[in-house]
Length: 123
Image (cartoon, rainbow, N blue to C red; front, side, top):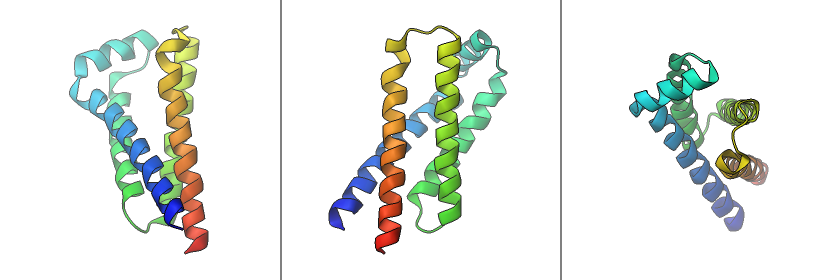
């Protein structure tokens, strides 16, 4: 049980740090966000909306309770990373630029999600 808790928190904290880092860039580096949005043909305000969703999802994962909301946060983070992967592939970005970041993101989501359910079934 102790190992499960430790692994859950390691994966969850790494996931939250990754999402908050991404949200920070979208909210507080507007010129870079606008340039990237223009490159991929998306409106810049979409990234601000996603940043707020990432912050709310991160808070949800770190707060006790809210089982159904946590499921939505995991789903939202997964959709976000799938969308990011699609954008990078369709824009022919070099795989070395995005694969490590997104690969780690998927590992953090899967690890956190698995250990979240192990903790719930044990407790």
